[in-house]
Length: 475
Image (cartoon, rainbow, N blue to C red):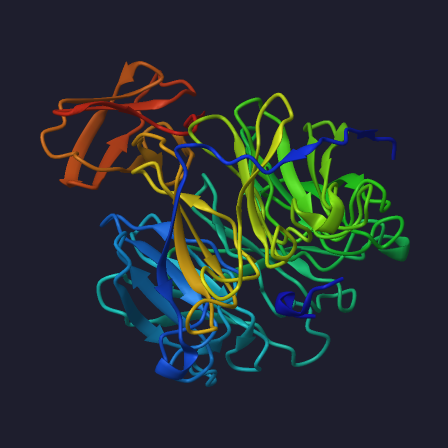
């Protein structure tokens, strides 16, 4: 099942009232109107990544061959198509998930189809050349034990390897897998776990979302189906492949999660479900690492679903400490929303989409750029009826972003931001670190002996910038 076709234990339930009051500082802009007839893409279900050059990069569902594309967009809305997928045996098709930047500066991603047997690929592409290399093609010569249709993006772990999921196939049937693939350019893939390893798929099946590496160095994720009532699960897996199911959705607490989890500053995990909850239209939940579950918000709390429904993407925690997310449908006009949830539990509708002017159907999460502004995509609507790229300025200031929010002592990490020329010092949790300014938007740091987990601060000629999340130091 493709994600684009989605329509479909003791816990605490907290139902929160929604408010349609927008922040007075909010400024919404439509930056790009996609038009598939112009071969410029047409967006799908991905989230942006901020490149080392300060521009935004993503994947689209159209392109010159109608098999998907990789594109770059400036913060002012100038779009450039970098690569068009072909679906041929040496290439993939339908890069639904977006991109991740590797330690080598290349972009890495997955396609849900294409490749040698048309069951999906893992690829890399240097940002400067647009020359793509297929690192791995998923094969189904017998029972498809490697899995197929990798819909989720990869995650780069502290050990230097990429981890990902396939939504279908595997050794136990059409249940999906978790895999590790080397980042050395050789594309060596190891299957770590096959879902439906327990009776009646109690461990879950069909993982659609990206994995998260949390502060304990373990990976966390969700499955769309399986569990006790086939409503999906939340799980933890060690980097070596030992899986523990933390929560099995029963419907009233949510169902069918497709968005990635995040670990917020309070240490808890937060996520969304596309269905279920108090009103059957999805919810927002939290979970601690012991498995204690709380339903924070159920969508369609207002008549006509003014708060939105069916959130298909995960959340982000912005620099104001609030959680921000998107819904695929609902809102004032029925075409999706951007919302926030603050630490005290207040739910706020930030923007309702109206189809023709600003787009419809938000399938990807937001990105907060280091300039403080949010950026996102819609998969339909807009002037070209093929989706849009938009920005929302909530009046938040600039910050620095850590490309990977974890690392080991002695390793080099990337820091993104702006105004780095003339930087005088960088510190992790107050401990000075050696650094190298590569450009005005990108510098590298080396994690020193004695470093401890904490925020990264960069002192520039214009002032001191602080990271939006702590940097986790692993021994």
